[in-house]
Length: 263
Image (cartoon, rainbow, N blue to C red; front, side, top):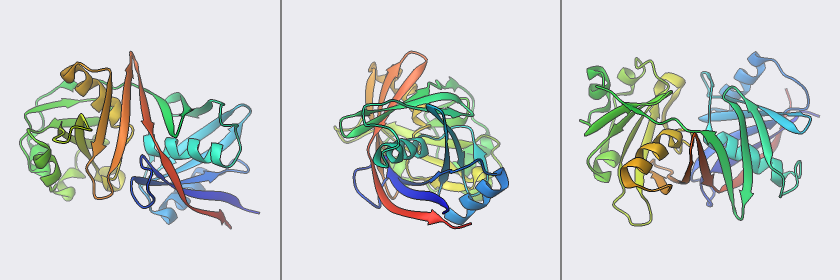
């Protein structure tokens, strides 16, 4: 028997929206080259590899091109699979050992809430090449640990951004977030996320980007709880709750495919 693999749409309650992630339930330790090959085969923005380690789980994330240090939607998908497969009871906390330290997930009614490190951005003068690649002049620019943050004047501008991905691949950071206040009352802000250097031109819904978006918009709006909409073609909703040096990221998930890896 091979490893079970499950495809989950994260940060959505509707199949074929949100951000799809493949979750591989490892029966034994596997080589990194094998995990990279599986991620290329899946060709999704992230493939997660889960290995039971006592009461915790080792968790690694790969794009089709690189291993990443932090991924929100594939962690949400992994927690969803753990509970759906009955590996943990519904009331238990899922604990993941990752390249970004210990991450946890809990069920909150129909939603899953992740506990991630906050990544508040610091103001910067954005590189001219970055602005040319994005094709929009930001009202404010900042940078977190992983990503550039470009704040635009309106949701319409965010939705209208058409980056030059070839130029963006030369940006050394993981990715670029563009964001603005939402024009819809049910959301506080909208965003999009581009990471061509990591093999993902535009990520449909990026949980980890909200580790930066949450602190920025929380301070700007004077709110500790926010709701963001990622305005990609698939779209997705991320709830954000600020908790000091941590950020709680909430969302739903739905399984769309279950199979077995034969190699």
